[in-house]
Each structure stands twice: as C-alpha cells, then as structure tokens.
Image 1 (tube, rainbow, N blue to C red):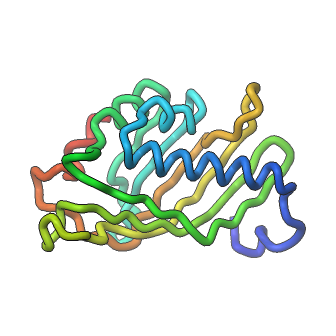
Image 2 (image 1 turned 90 degrees about the horizontal axis):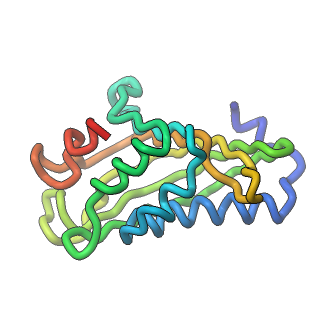
Length: 169
C-alpha cells in the first residue's frame, strides 16, 4: 500500500483511537513486562516479523501464532535489567470496514547494549507496517505487524538483545 492510499477521508475517530490504543498498549506492555497484555494485542494467528532494511529486508526473526508470540515476549528483556522505550509516531491509519492498515515510524531506546554502556542508547529505528482487525470482543488487534528496521546499533553477540536470543521464539 502506498502513501497515496492514506490520503482521503479520515477513519472514524473511534476506530482510529482504538487502533492507536492497541499500538500504545504494545509499546507499554513490551517495555514493562506485561506479557499477557502484549500478547493480547495480536490475533491468535498473527504474524510479527522483524527485518533489516539495511540488508535487503533480511528477516531478523519471524514469530507467528499465539504460542510463539507468548514465548517471544517471555524472553524479552525488561526492567530492572534493562529499561527500554519503543516510541511510535507519525501514524497513518486506513480503516476499511472491520480491517485496517497502519504505517508509523518507531525508535527503540534502551539503557544497555550499545557503545555507551548504561547510558541511553538509540538501539534502532524504522517503520511499522501493520494490518489490524476488529475482533469479536470489539478490540482492534494486529493480524500482522512488520517491523522494518532501517538502522540499528545492534548489541554485541551474547548480550541481552542478541538476535539469537529470539531466533527460537
């Protein structure tokens, strides 16, 4: 979907706000270890894909389905070992009935893992490309979340966010 597809009428405010709420819950729950809340941002068969735009969109990891999503988030580092912030901005949403697409910019900031040690570190930034659906309970959830990593200061192998830590998720 191109940016031209996002030009036109705005989605209903309620739908847009509900979708933004899902995006906000995703970040807050991921950064503070609310695993069940994070997993509930996705449909049972959802795909969460993280790729590396600097390497031809090579997959960093692919996680699909409720069980694998739960395993992924259970392995994710959190306070007090690491403080991280997933900041999402410039969100464009297109609602078409009970489905929606969204694109947004993101930046991941953390307290460890970069050359500055415990000092703040901009770990990565990029773009989310999302597909969402309204579920039977009325909540909007991700059916697909593609995290395009456009630039990254990946930690050294063996550190808490090493790609290998999530490869089996």
